Length: 89
Image (cartoon, rainbow, N blue to C red; front, side, top):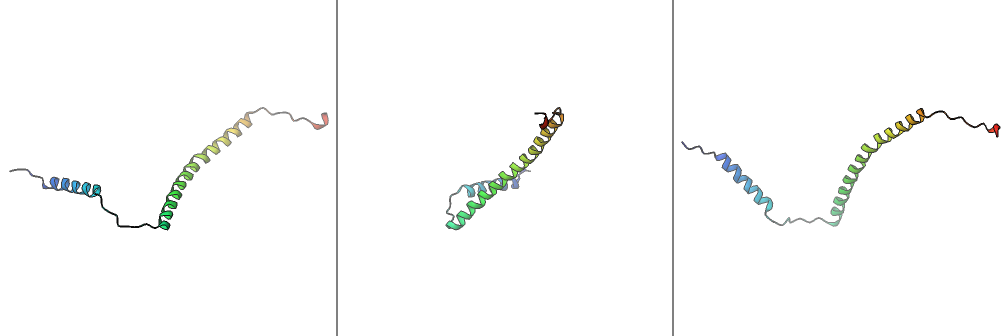
């Protein structure tokens, strides 16, 4: 008895069909007006700006707290300075 796997043959044929459909050129038959095009570009820029601002916030605020903590520790370790008395002049 011959062991034929029909599903393997069908799945590979289906894969070839999908790749051919993706690579085949065909007209879109669609029109995007200038208003919709500018709106899409604006949404894209807004999305990129949102990601950049979020990344900046995630990096900046912990770094800011670290800097403040380091400055406070260095001020606490500094020896006290004697203030000049204005009457001594």
